[in-house]
Image (cartoon, rainbow, N blue to C red; front, side):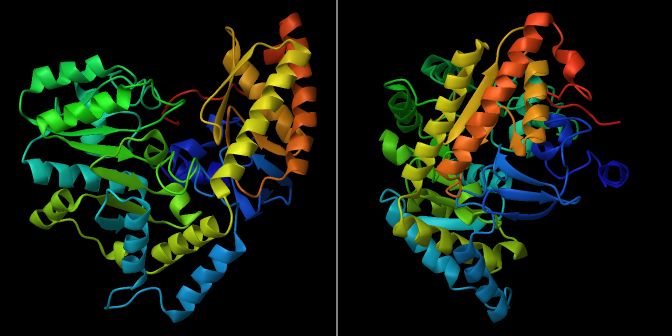
Length: 430
């Protein structure tokens, strides 16, 4: 089916992160027939436990969570679309602003990238300025990728390397300027260069680790001094460390925060929340879409929030992530394999070291797949992961780490692969 897809769909799939070439070219099970909890069944009937990116971070509760699904089914029975508005969006706006006392208003869309574009549009409408300073990954829209117009590798540290801004108008050059995480001076350089035309500072409040002491506070001060709108992209980190945005734990509030992924547990919903003085600027621009008014997204989000009320989901995600990190540490220590472990606990990253790191990573995925696990260099925790699952994953990791270490000692790692090495960045598919 994937070969058919490559003929019919440019790039083979709708999401770069789901391309099989990113995991195990020629060997990764491209399509699923069903997914429940952490168990994924492919089109050939093979079952795997997902210890990889968990629906690209969208399913924090686990696949097909019954409470969320039942709420959505009820919404469908009542009609998912109407000439009138769905009341769930009002209830969700109230819930999100209550969770974030600094925020007064909310707008909703259905995807993370478009939500970031909405946030930037609001910031520019409110400030009547043009330039945006960015740190981190913020989607595929022109406003963001235009940073690569000035320099081909401007965003290499923020998203996958190799992305050409083809199709982005050259007239946008210079309007989006990257700065480095934990480097407030690189943001000050942007402020000095753009004068009074800085509309927004857009960033992930936490990336692979917590920020250095004073970094976020320094960014907040610059936003206050310049009048720029501070936008926190919480699409990845949100609802994993606490119920809401990770900025609540870090102690620095933005002017706008953006959520998606975990908010709907797999159903499309994204939220832009913010201070009323800034959010009201949305009425000075045209920000509107029919798909944003359907009922399923807000219904799913409310069911997710209800699950968070009943049990401490973030604590469970943190504990699971810590356990998997320890699995990697123990397996590496036992076998002598050179790896590093990083990332926030629920968003853990495994990095193989050395000149053949990408080959080792590919072999890891291949061998874990043989043992019934979807696995790679990243692990996104889901509440559906159990201690038994983690114990079984640990046994498999020890076996595979030992195999990789043995192959590395004899220089035969690539010879163990049954196909090509996984892609590490953006590549056009032929």
